[in-house]
Image (cartoon, rainbow, N blue to C red):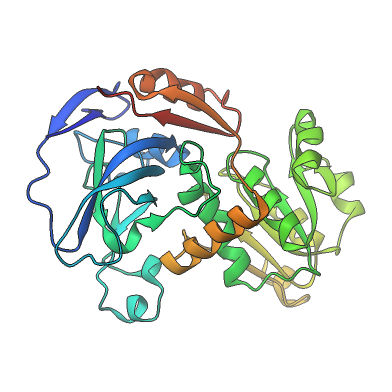
Amino acid sequence: MIRAYAAHEAKGKLTPFEYDPGELKPDQVELDVIACGICHSDLSVLNNEWQNSTYPLVPGHEVVGTIAQAGSNVKHLKAGDTVGLGWFSGSCMICGQCMSGNHNLCASSEQTIIDRHGGFADKVRCNAEWAMPLPTGLDARKAGPLFCGGITVFNPIVQFDVKPTDRVGVVGIGGLGHLAIQFLNKWGCEVTAFTSSDSKRDEALGMGAHQVVNSRDEGQLEKIAGSLDFILSTVNVDLNWPAFLNVLGPKGRLHTVGAVLTPIPVAAFSLITGQKSVSGSPLGSPATIRKMLDFCARHRIAPVTEHFPMSQVNEALARLEAGKARYRIILENDFT
């Protein structure tokens, strides 16, 4: 039996829960959970904001653990290996996207907390292709957020060939944005951080931003018009989209990884005249995750985290929902 914390209805409190996962499939691995980050997507799924949640529901998709057992087809992982698991927990492995290395775009992909139970537990299972070995130098207690928040912002840097010579902007200095700033600084870019909270200015500069702009100040936005090559929006709220498009130079790209639920209004001429683009992306492929982990180990990049015992999951969720989390919250397994 797997011991976990589950919600039994939308917006319900998590309570102790046990379930039988059945026999381990040949392509699966089972992890002994060390720690699991809490993501805003966990809140969205818990509250059924996307209308695809099923209950009882065990959240948690920023897992780091050790391999407890591996299926008969799994040859590259063994018991005791430290691995991470993010939003995706399985791919079909035979479609065109999987065969091209884009497992994250597989139409039949499995998500760790959609129609299955996640990592707020003592154990969790996934297909072996999504269990990513943790490089030496990364702290297993802190690394969980890299497997969702980290790869969410690292993936577009790779996919859209952001160059060290580029001037880039990061909108939002939160759970995603603070990692994006670190990545882009070490990538070699000149980084502009956009925030609605001037109180985060010094922290943004300390993380690697070269300048900080108030995203609600149209005058500040106008001063840097036409200056950026790439803007990465990490927030899930409406922005002054025309103003941010105006900040881009010719052939610039405005890219969002924040799940804004309202349409983004874009006038065609604002794209045509400067050959600009608006785009979005999900999390990255297993290969891109490995590249990100190696990059983090090489440059000593890590999320800024707060830690709770897993038994205090409801208190931790309330802190995140109230906007009081200092970047990322991690639950440490305290099942005995």
